[in-house]
Amino acid sequence: MKIYKTMLINLVSLLILIPGMAGAYDGNWKRGDVYYRMVCTDCHKNQPVGKVPPDSRTQAEWAAYLEADQHANGQDTVSKYVSKSFRASIADENKAAAKFANVPEEELFADIKAILLRGASDGDAPAGCR
Image (cartoon, rainbow, N blue to C red; front, top):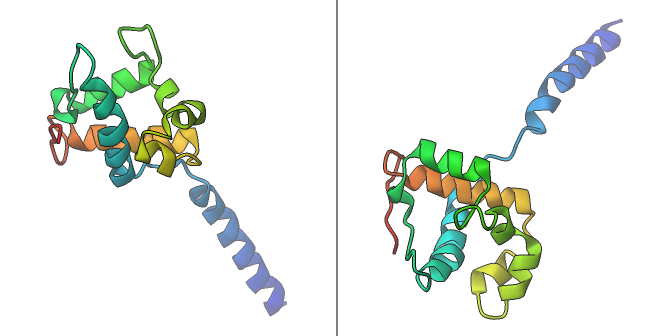
């Protein structure tokens, strides 16, 4: 009887913990920072819009921008630039794209979101372009 009670307690504990273990990926701001600086900022510096530092927007503005998934005034998507196919297309000339070639797209998108929210003008560590 005691064994069954112990097994039941362990089973219930496991069932309670499983949803937390399968939770959403929060994003790695450090990895996002490397990718943002070496891919996004590198590309933007050669564009008419110029560099777009994280502190150029608030957290709410960055969240809305990423949620809308529209880049270049709606002509493109942000998710295109974290796709594995995009990374593969620039990997020969971009070390970050090559380094993160196999990172799942959803994780890399979350990483970029993490650095943008952290570095936003009202974020934990407002950051300009380096």
